[in-house]
Image (cartoon, rainbow, N blue to C red; front, side, top):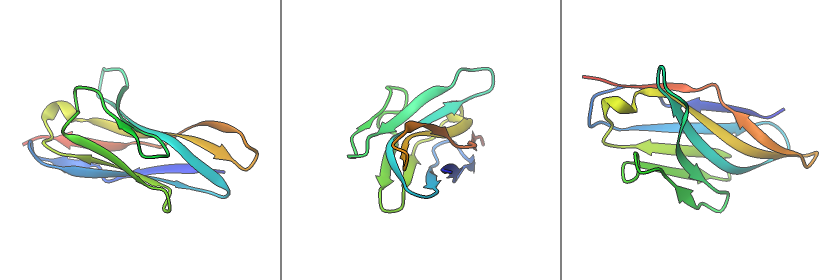
Length: 120
């Protein structure tokens, strides 16, 4: 069984920074493309960053230049560095990973989410 666990959320003042982590654990799996999403109260879940296994990253305009996604394949961990945070970045942040298991089945896994609150 594979699990994804996010961490690193919290309360930060406007203009501040946070680094989120998404760690995959289990036995005999391969971590492929990983996405970070966020969902604010009353809003749809929004994709904020994507990274392929080879490290190619993509961002929507809303966070480009402020957020940076990276990964450590040896640790099966993906990071989201968030700078210049604003109140509108307040949301629960989730990671979603395409994982191939020992049975050669690939599907998406979700983490439990981590709350990010930007407020003075």
